[in-house]
Length: 327
Image (cartoon, rainbow, N blue to C red; front, side):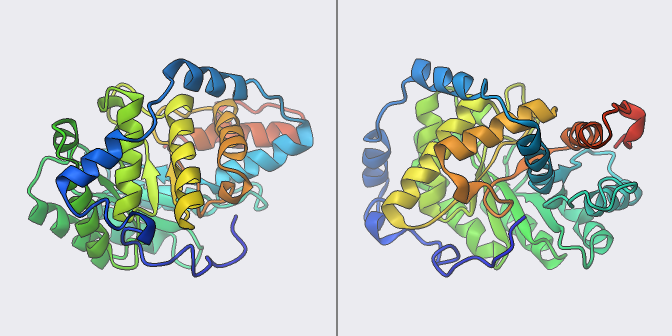
């Protein structure tokens, strides 16, 4: 629910910041930098994430947090069976999540495949809801760079405000970090004025150390957001991997002055889960990230539970699943 425009620092050129300009000049220097990052204490990370998840939230704060979470959702449909009608319905829900209560905040964005961008753009026109498009041969990313860039340009030409790209996990796991970095740079350039979210598919990166390295590659290459997952694999967003990425963006801003957003995606389905993630944000990165410009949830079913909990807080009654639409 951002009320002020981004500062010049926030929207500064997204090339490698000066403090790290030499890091990406060669494969060897980038590897040396990434493998020189502090190792992740997996037990400590998971314990802290679990501890923060036990924080209690008072009723008044809970009402605010639910509205904040709604405003941070990228309402998503990424299915082969998507139709223009389904996308239009999703757009209408993003603009007015609860038609019976117009005080309900809109969602941050709708997220669709590139061929559905124009339909989504029309559905949310004039509302302030952004249109995000997955690209770069989502979700596997197994395509030549030229094909990936064409995918991005098509989405931008159709009106996408944001691009969600997937990294080449094969290149990353093979240790070809510079290839991953340079591909992100190329996609950022092809995205033009659209904000770029870089998806790591953390469930395929095997270790927390790899997630930390991927986070730094994304930030060094100019990502506007770093994102956990596609939602298409068995392990998606978790409190621990999101906490690790929040630490990365916090440290990156401390060293460069450049702020980068975080988007956990996949597996976040309940209000209770969403509020735990907001506590992670506040306690790790700080209040500056408690805004839809810097934090998003990639979700579809999450919105319904938030709406039901919101209605319960307002009326004292729990309406059940028939209160919301089935997307």
